Length: 387
Image 1 (tube, rainbow, N blue to C red):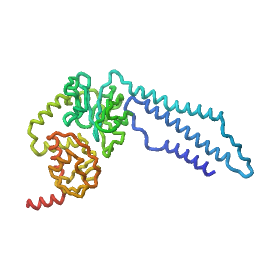
Image 2 (image 1 turned 120 degrees about the vertical axis):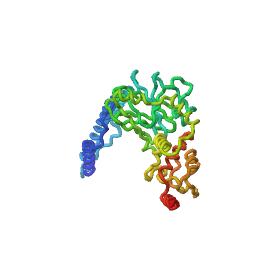
Image 3 (image 1 turned 90 degrees about the horizontal axis):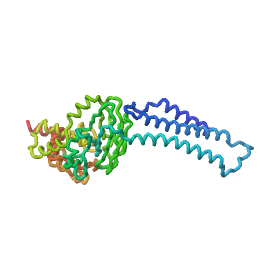
Image 4 (image 1 turned 180 degrees about the horizontal axis):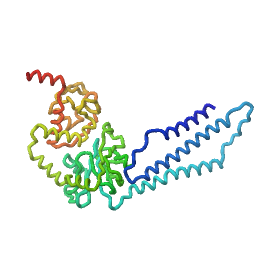
């Protein structure tokens, strides 16, 4: 009897929790109402089975409980009629679960002919975005062309890629009401580009191009997440999708640099002298820290994260896992950023990936870290010496 009561309480509590719980899906901002409908169908079918089966178990526990003097039920190893009913009911239930999902997925990857193309490139732990230029086509890419100045690996010899628009930072804009075809690649491990209000997500497998489409229906700024565990910086692999009217989107798009212009700028930066110290270089380093995903593991406020905080790091004597120590100066930072696996800082996992940086970018990043201050003890010594 106790078991029957517990089963009924579990059923009642489960249904009540579903009704009153505060965790609901985010408001829909795309055309994929059918995905929400599929989730509802799945919930209804599984919920119905859950309630019926547990109520039936409670009934059988009470109805056929042991009683003194009651005859023991005869042993029946097979019941073909019951088996047929169970097989038929289970088959119908599974078909009801699978069929809507298959229909929705088929439409999810069947792209409209007028869709805007957006490429998403995942890399630990950052997002990059690329759009086709005036010709409406994305240029060819190849892993052998990937470099600090060409993170997408665009083929410089492909004319179709010269006018490709490269989105700086981790925020991309999209026009309201226009279908968008999302093409996704990964430079390292498995990622998953997910914009919850769009109900849009897809695994990004290294060596493959994944795809899906959606139509933004509500203007706003939406967070894009990585929905596959991709390393220690995974929780901070965030980006933003801004949906706006066509006029606003056009103005934003017009300001984007093309691949050809970016290549010219990179060549000019290689031949030009490094920018003078001060605000310009520090600002460049701050922007690089965001664009390269450094902020996923390193904070600038002294709080702990996967890697050492950059606040007060410059000039600090760092302890290594092998028992040695090292002064965090410009040479240390340059060598560590270039080859992070050569040294292992005590207390932190050796998970920092190699990041392609030009000499100018490396100098700017070091200048930014230096601008975040020195250890308090060293700062006090420097002030005392200045007096």
